[in-house]
Structures are given as C-alpha cells and as structure tokens.
Length: 291
Ligand code: IPE
Ligand code: IPE
Ligand code: MG
Ligand code: MG
Ligand code: MG
Image (cartoon, rainbow, N blue to C red; front, side, top):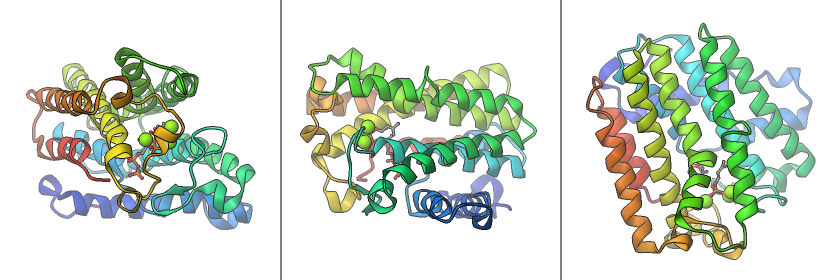
C-alpha cells in the first residue's frame, strides 16, 4: 500500500491508507467469538481523527523513511492502542461516558464484560502487529508508553485526582503520562522506522511530548467550550465528574496560553529535521481543533 505522492502526501491521503490498514490488520472475524470481533471493529473503525498514526507517518516522512508494510503496521498498532485506551476510559468504573465518536460507547453497545475484553484484545493485538515488523525496538517503545510507567499510570493518577483540588504541576504530570507518552512513542516510532539518528529521535521525542501536552490541554478546554454534537462525546462531562483538568487547575485563559506554549515548543523542536510540513500541520490540528 502506498500514498500517492510520497513526500507531498496530504493528510487526507495518508488517512485513507491508515483507514484501510486498520481494517486489513484486525484479526479476521471468522477467527473470533462474534461479539468480540464486532466490538473490536466498532471501537476501531467508527471514526476518529487518527492523530497518533498520522504522527508516526509524519515523523517517518520527516526523517526520510522508505515506504514499507512495517510503516502501516506501526500506524495501525498505534491506533489500536489508542482505541483500547478509549474503550476502557469510557467504562463506568473510569469516566462513565455514554457517547464516543458520536455513537454509544463500547460498553453501552456490547455490555461491560465485552468492552473490557475488546479493550484488552485491542491492546494485545497491537503488540502482535508490532512484533511482525523488523523493528523489535517498537515493541518496547509502545509497551513503555502505554504501561504502568506511562498511559496506564496516568489513568491511575487521573482517577486518584478526581474530586480533589490539584495544582498545575500535578495535572501536567497526569497529561504527560496518560496522553503525551503515546504521542511521544508515535513520533519516536516514525524515526525508528526510518533509521533516524539519535539526535533526530531526541528531537522527535520532544515534538511528540509537547504535541501531546498541547493536545490534552485542548481536550480539557473543548470539554468546557465545545458542544456534544461537534465533539461526538458529552461536553461538560469533566466538570460533572470533577475531573482534574488543566483549566480547573489554572484558568481557561492560562490553559489557552499553555496550550499555545506547548505547540510552540513542538514546532521549535523540528528545526534539525527534514521535510517537517506534515509534523507542523499536526501541531495546528492538535492545538487549534474544534473536535
Ligand atoms: C481522545 O483522543 C482521548 C484523549 C487522549 C483526550 P482523540 O481526540 O484523538 O480521539 P479520536 O480518536 O479523534 O476519537
Ligand atoms: C483520556 O483522557 C486519556 C486516555 C484515554 C488515555 P480523557 O478522559 O480526557 O479523554 P476523553 O475526553 O474521554 O476523550
Ligand atoms: Mg479519562
Ligand atoms: Mg474520558
Ligand atoms: Mg477529555
């Protein structure tokens, strides 16, 4: 599978190949228990911005990679991990949300048991897909990003902070773990796939982390400033559940300023890389989006 004009590929063209890869690399439904296959496909193939695989692609492109099946496998794995995190994040024992991507959440549609298991299966499947690439370093990269010292640790801290007054530093640390760790791994994965050198991978690490921090502050702002219809998830849910969000820990104005500051740092990290047009476009998509 290829994107038509390699270096000038538009985000829409890359997204099309990502969509096809997500579908193609899911386990065959005939191999699975029916509700599991349905719940996995529902959670992966029902929309979403596909930002994490786009970060993999853009980082790979900026460091001069040659197109390969391993690139698309890594893009798909990143999105499977994200989908796993969303399915579990929405559960009644976590954020208790009924709406995701404009549709009933996985547990609303399939029940809690199947949602827990579909999330588990997506996470495990992501590593099966990664293990089929020629880059074993990717397995460690994503395992660290989503594990106890990364996203899952951040989700634990997020739950622990619910209903408590928390300061800016604590929320920033929660954001770094629950969200930025995966963005960082996606950016680094793009570099690993293209054989980037140490300094390029370090630049991509900074890019991914700053992008993820801008992204999550914007997510917290959209909960306050967006509409349910536009977001495809229930606006105001953070307030109702007394979640520890960035605007709650600071102010709406400060959150906007810090979102821009992280976006600026993400852009600044790109100076030593090659064609960074897609990476720059993704900064805008994350920091200035409306959904
Ligand atoms: C939502 O992520 C979860 C967070 C980490 C805030 P996205 O806003 O990227 O969700 P989709 O994939 O586009 O639905
Ligand atoms: C989700 O953060 C972070 C992860 C899924 C790891 P949120 O709880 O803010 O995401 P949304 O707002 O439900 O999409
Ligand atoms: Mg949450
Ligand atoms: Mg949530
Ligand atoms: Mg949110």
